[in-house]
Image (cartoon, rainbow over all chains, first blue to last red; front, side):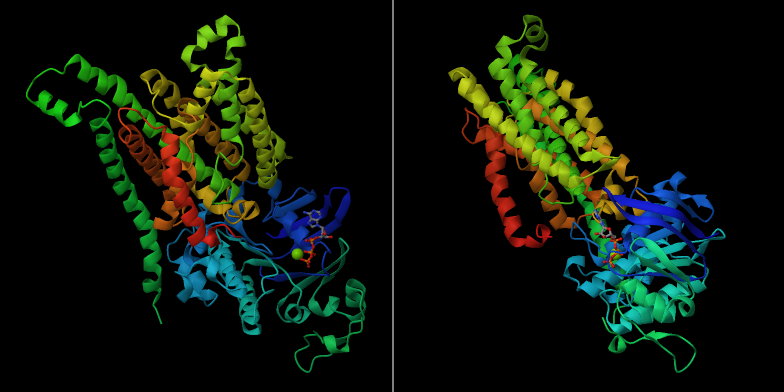
Length: 260
Length: 355
Ligand SMILES: Nc1ncnc2c1ncn2[C@@H]1O[C@H](COP(=O)(O)OP(=O)(O)OP(=O)(O)O)[C@@H](O)[C@H]1O
Ligand SMILES: [Mg+2]
């Protein structure tokens, strides 16, 4: 019961953006995808979520996603896109409820408010979504995604959160809060795949890290295994140094000591 | 600090309000229908006829003709056309995620207009057996066929690898609209005086030509299209978050878009075919309803059908009485009433448009 992507290739026109990626994400773990801008992280997530044409195979909890209906997929995984737009003046709570419309067993009326409370925005329920700040909007969208797969395990199957840069507009406190939500979801038996830019948050919260560069998987492993001077410097094309942690062995990267 | 129960209440109210609106609007539709049967160019009134019937008297021939052959079909057509225009506007806006989208915007009404003009100006060149077959309905039939053709063509052009690009569809619609506008212009040059008068009357839109035959011809298509549109509520809600997210929350987006396009073509084509170009209903009705009870398409679609029908009937009453015994084309009434509302919405709710 995991999420397995095998030899994923994606081309936009003649340009091949993903050149054969294999990725296995386990439930119970937070899997982070990192890599420079344009390396294909969002594209990989797009393939995993069947939102763009690709070659290769993706299986979710043992089933090929190619043979699954949209509502079956929606019952097992929720997707937070890198950018969210909203066309009509829905309120915050209405937006969160949109996530429930997949007709799954979890259509419980209290879930949207609990999801909003989880991201610390329960008191915003009646605000218009368009009036929110960038970070608030991002957290509301996360609440929508959480509401869609509220129970991390259902019918013995893990459910999945696929998050594209879930903390990109958040302040440091909310970055920690959102990463904690992701970790809690995984600890409760669900699976999480998160595209990340912040390597330190990745080091703290991810159980597995995939490093993408130019459409290939450069490294895959635990944070300690892959967040190394050599791999990071090659991935990002700048001289990065990973420091030794004072306690508990989590690597950290100070931009101060990097040279471009 | 508000409790969960407190904060959850008002939004349920907005949905509840939209539900209550179903009943209010249904009531308004009934009142408008009674008004529409009551007034007209002759001083035959519904109330007089009803009291006659109540006293066991028979209606005069003239009363029966006015009621059954003139006002009732006209009322039925108003309901059909108003509902069709408002619902196809709502579906179009949901599909294009733009509150200003309308069948007029993607060129469907323009090409329907071209179809009408072609039939009026060049209809004489058609073989007799065709004109004999279509009779007075040549113009509506041509308008309908052109509308349907455009929608299918637009859909083909903008769908690649099973995915419809809304942007391509919009731009192609603008191009097709411009093209048919130009073609119409050329044909107008070729028209004689009588044809020109037909053209302007048709272009402004009117329910004056209502007959049971037309109502019967339009009913199946319009009810089918509106019925199909009613199933799109959840899907269109999801589409507000973009096509990818709509799919992620469980919509079969391709299927939904096909149904949306077909229902718009059916409703707009049939409506334009029997009544000409009646504008603004499809844009103003959903706007007003969104202001009143929010953008949830599950309630917006049925409410749009009711309000569209009501407003069109009332506009038709105005068109009939304001310069009686002559009659104003209803398209002029909807434009005079609709355009300022539209502008007012633009000015007060810029957020609706600027994203
Ligand atoms: N719709 C598209 N058409 C053509 N090229 C695209 C399209 N979307 C992405 N690309 C290209 O594919 C490559 C990978 O894009 P992708 O969005 O996956 O990058 P990313 O790793 O998510 O980057 P970022 O960190 O900036 O979000 C980029 O070079 C991008 O220019
Ligand atoms: Mg990206």
